[in-house]
Length: 202
Image (cartoon, rainbow, N blue to C red; front, side, top):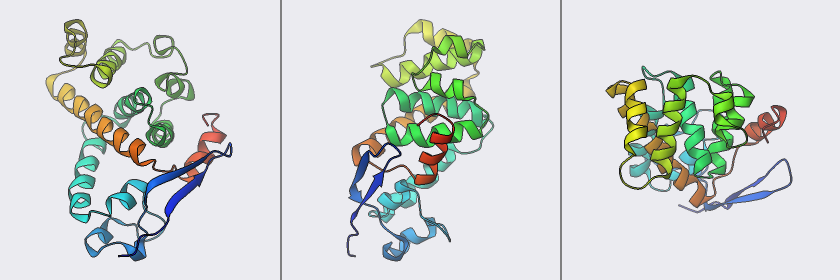
């Protein structure tokens, strides 16, 4: 299979980001990868990069979709975890992409800014359960070894075991994607960049 040129993105402020690997276009995708491509439009950069290894694509996308997609836990809560984790890991692609998703899931611009480290978390988030979740996410994303007992006790007081297991896995899966997307320099889509500009989040 011939290798297309690495994708280049020109941001709204004129910044250029080029992916480290080529993003595989639909007409060049291996047969095993084609079912993951949309009928119209471009695939996500994650799909288009994973298409280089279709057997890994087949395992990764369903897993990510199951963890980050719809479950008994509401989308707002999942996006709190994803945006906060991505901001802590300084993953440009995930922060930009999920800032828009978070807005669409009902988070306010002020909440998104706070999750991104651009505002005071405790001044914006006042719900004790969400604050306990944020403390847990910070410890999971930045810590080494076990989560401190005080933070664990707060999380256990705010969440049942099923929620804690799932939201920890949301954070862990996000960490995996953060390192993947940042290391490969995946470009953010033009529509997402435009929306961020419109929302004052660029």
